[in-house]
Length: 259
Image 1 (tube, one colour):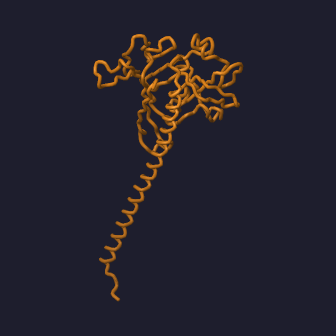
Image 2 (cartoon, one colour):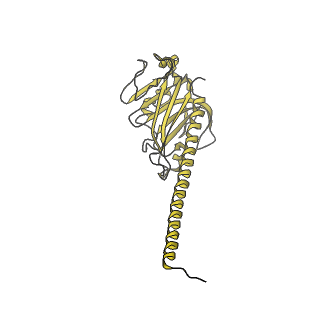
Image 3 (cartoon, helix red, strand yellow):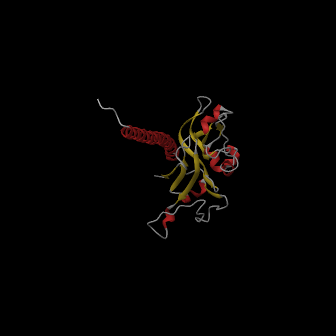
């Protein structure tokens, strides 16, 4: 039986090295694809949690209450009332109406907070208050004890689950960046009927009854129900917990009011 020559051995070794190198490349790309798929799945789960919650809360939006939108260069926050079946985090107390804060937490803008204060009768606790919605419609600061404009700006909920595990009740999602909310109304398509115009931090033009300031502030109350927006547009960036997808993914979600 003939043995291998040196040249044949060199060719065989070269082919083996090429196969090993190709296998390494395939393995590397396979691992990258697996990691990217896992990161994408994580982002899509977060997206589903956020959009489902938006749809639930705004399906019960009380347009005879308050809606406050506050935006700076980094993010937006909302304050409103919604009807539904709300239960306290601490005990069996329930209510069919709640005041809701929706936006970044005060200590970490990448944590998206959902803070609910249930309106109850006769009792108060951490997440429910002895308050009447009818009384809030007349004087919300006096009856609920808070200024909606301050809640969405300087008094945003602080979330730190490492310090207080109960803060998890207000943490809707993590790794949320550039959270922006804009609004539109029937008049916003003028002068181009084929184009919807959205108003907010980047486009403060709109009804002069709104307080367009820096930071941007727009609010609707029980006294101006005819001026309430017809839709809200949410834009935000979601990142995975390991930072595998560079710069995250940008999403847009629209909810219609009064439909």
